[in-house]
Length: 249
Image (tube, rainbow, N blue to C red; front, side, top):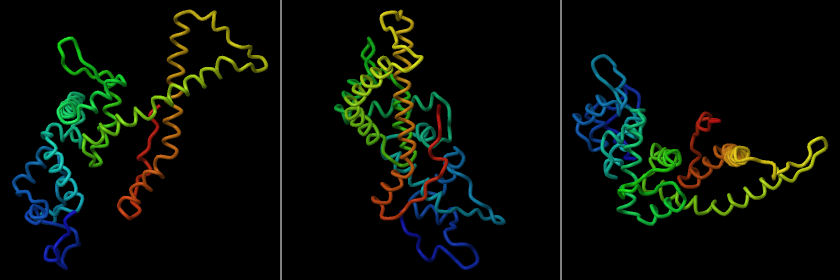
């Protein structure tokens, strides 16, 4: 982030407080555009002291993020969905579609990998079809942390490549355990007696069990390890909210 010139602060107000003109010089944006982002609810309003509004470093980071997303090709509607100023599903879908279109143009290998893993596909007219929007939303949520969408999609593709074989092996192991364990008072399950409904229910339950177990393990280690990764990359121990990791069922 651009360092703040000493001339921007004065003894009669706290450090890291900027007028709209000072903020504009720091981020390289006109005061008019700063105010326009406020009116679109992309930027929080300043704290007012009398007739003067003062901005702080959170406003600087927010505007730098907006500029970065614009350089990646996102329009203001998509940026609003990324930053959370708009929570509507149609905006989120527009964001996903925009990111996929860029991936097809710029990183065809990433799109092929996502297609191979059943995340995206093609409809009969040759248009892109999103088969697993939840997976893409999870990847693109990292854009809110300042990670470019192209990077998150490529990491998603690489992650799916890495865990594909492990997932298949775990399904075999856990499924075999469930069907073969013979505990006192609980005789072994007679698989031959399962009808189509029972088979479908067992399959769905096994998948949900594995997904939930992996999520629990990831959440148990996620906060500490993510903080360590950031510290090793930026040379300082970052602050991570306790509420960052939440239980989603």
